[in-house]
Image 1: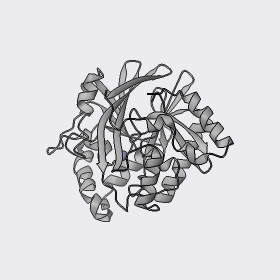
Image 2 (image 1 turned 90 degrees about the vertical axis):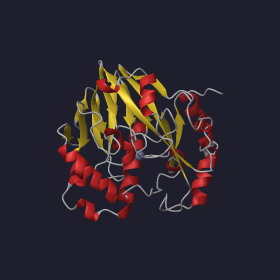
Image 3 (image 1 turned 30 degrees about the vertical axis):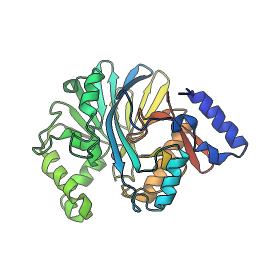
Image 4 (image 1 turned 45 degrees about the horizontal axis):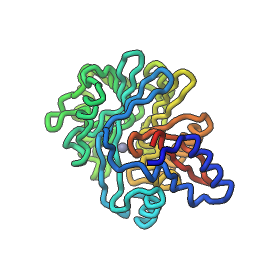
Length: 322
Ligand SMILES: [Zn+2]
């Protein structure tokens, strides 16, 4: 496997842009070589003094469906996957959770999809966490990005809804928590979301370990909650800063970069407010580029970390350490 450094990728992307080869940028060699599923399901790296562990939960091999992107056809999405060197047999939606070790405290971002509660191939989080040497019982804080199943079902036991992390503090954007738990919300949800809304309303208000915070709050040393609405009303990213290094944990802002890198204007079926999600996507990625941050995303190819460069109206994603 050819190893391409981030700098090489940026230089090659810059050269290609200079020669007007924008169509080649989507085929970043590092991206095309990203395996569909990792041989080792965890990866550790540093952001300054903070240790980040990317832990692989699994992959949703989503059958192609015309509604997945509201303003693009199945042919368009297949073409974007092919241009990024990804399979076109199905829509690959991997899921990765990150755990931060900050001065010995373990802080997890989201909880994975809960074995057997989301997709049949997303069952690996507990095993991979153990292999990474992380004791789930020692996680003291969970930063919750939003209340979609693949991000919160790992908080609840299948069937009983018993708290999996009863002693951890669960930090969530106040807008997200209030929107989902508001009286009368379930009745207003689309049919496909009523089950989720009911589960949230039956369970979360009974838990005492939720802490609701506003945009910009420092939720752990060096970590701030960033309002990133559109995907859901209170969807949040988390900005990590240590020793002059920065990482934007973008969660679902740019969920499948093979599609939304070259086409940030595409609106996903799961983007509750499509135009707002597009605006948030552009603002967040522009900031990441301007401030030379690393970025990771819950549904980026594992380990989910890399960088973006601008390409006309879109972006090219280069995985770090492909
Ligand atoms: Zn998601």
